[in-house]
Amino acid sequence: MLLQALSFSTLFVLFSLIFIGGYVSASGVGLTCPDWPLCPQGLLPHEDFIIEYIHRSVAATTGVLVVATMAFTLKSKAAPKSIKITSIIAAGAVIGQIALGAIVIVERLHAVLVTTHLGLGIVLFSMVLMTALYAYRLEGKKALAKAQ
Ligand code: HEM
Image (cartoon, rainbow, N blue to C red; front, side):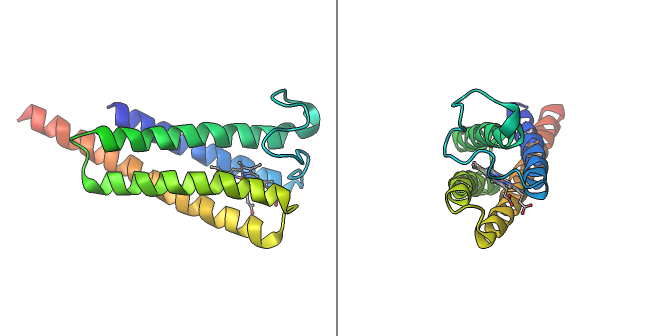
């Protein structure tokens, strides 16, 4: 139950992050926060860079959730190999994506890097979706075993 809740929460937060990322890109506010890792006012948000600030904060939250999901699946004895594999790939992708986000800033929104950032975001979403679906199936199997 906990794995199911964790993986679906991760999926929801990640979907919101991709949505915010699209808005950052389309509205041209990607460099309002020109430094890395923090914005000009450190941890304090400001209306001048609020959208990019939210994008980074939600990215950090997503990173924690994805890595926590992986730790949970690796610890679980009931979890099949498939969910362990998708959650490990998701953790690798989220770490790569956060590092790539930093490079996107340092390289001042180079087109190839921004496109790669989008592509890796899709890979990450696919892996988190598969992890959530495997978790859903695992809970179903557990419930069935209990009922029998
Ligand atoms: C899990 C982590 C992340 C995900 C899933 C993610 C996802 C996305 C997506 C989907 C876009 C829209 C891309 C497009 O429309 O072409 C985007 C844009 C952007 N992301 Fe991220 N992002 C993440 C982390 C970060 C981090 C840590 C930074 C670093 C500061 C960052 C900086 C940016 C910037 C600057 C843009 C706008 C690029 C532009 O103006 O075209 N992202 N992100």
